[in-house]
Image (cartoon, rainbow, N blue to C red):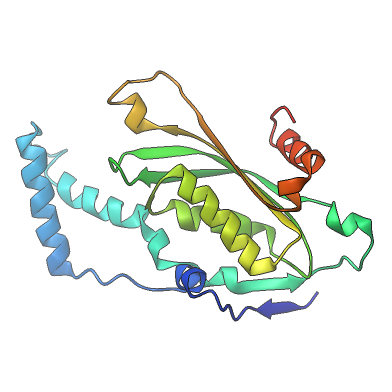
Length: 217
């Protein structure tokens, strides 16, 4: 099966996927550690114990690691030719991957939200490696974001990459900003769906996709 290295016209999506190293110097990191130490100390943490002495440094390094999605993923630019050669089945056969676990940081409070994604598409001229669907979800999840944008970015990028007959994305996530603060909900799940192409006008396809996600169709 032949593969193709895409040359995308969509600058926003290309910039999202190409490797772009963030430029944060060691001096900046040390300064950020000082800011975090001041905040944690003011909020009550004793930074003079063996367990907490390096907490500001660990916190900043961890925050940098979990936002690596801003650096993109050039491996997503590789696609393969489809094996579908016409016929009605080519407009109905779904490729569905999931559940794909993800963790993200809400841009409103910088608290985590985490959950599962299901991604489906109906191939046209190209397909993408199954592992790339997981890469796509996690690239956008490893940013400061909101669930609605996360699903839209996954759907729009897959549509641009493959020009498929349709794209479907289902996300469900628990948001710690509603559990640890505010209304302090016990175990809420926020569910969002995103439809492109054939899915938008075909209720049977949407139902089949949702049943594959373990939901009522």
